[in-house]
Image (cartoon, rainbow, N blue to C red):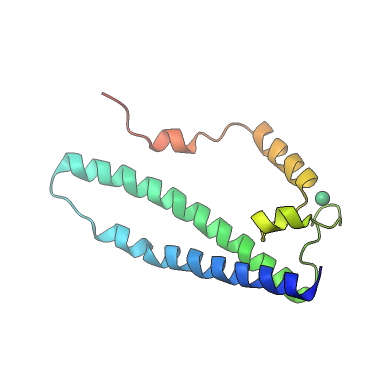
Length: 129
Ligand SMILES: [Zn+2]
């Protein structure tokens, strides 16, 4: 990887880090919405749980971005954390914080699926009436 390429990814990572931190910092806004109406309150609760799910994802993303910045500092950026192969430029252009090559990422996703379906989202959707 050339120096200008590293520089470009570094800037992308820092931008992403700022964006995610801003999103997490705004989570307090969720707490101030209070409705005296019970039905509205219920809906807001569902919405808030959904939001906190998103925040959880945001926190995970932020951890990945920070870890990528760390790898950039210690020189292992762009190297697959699993098989030590170079992660392709095409992949890094889409996901600069990628820690694994496409092949290893697929293996990880596959292993995750075998642990069982992720039904978290469906639990948070209110029942239709
Ligand atoms: Zn790999």
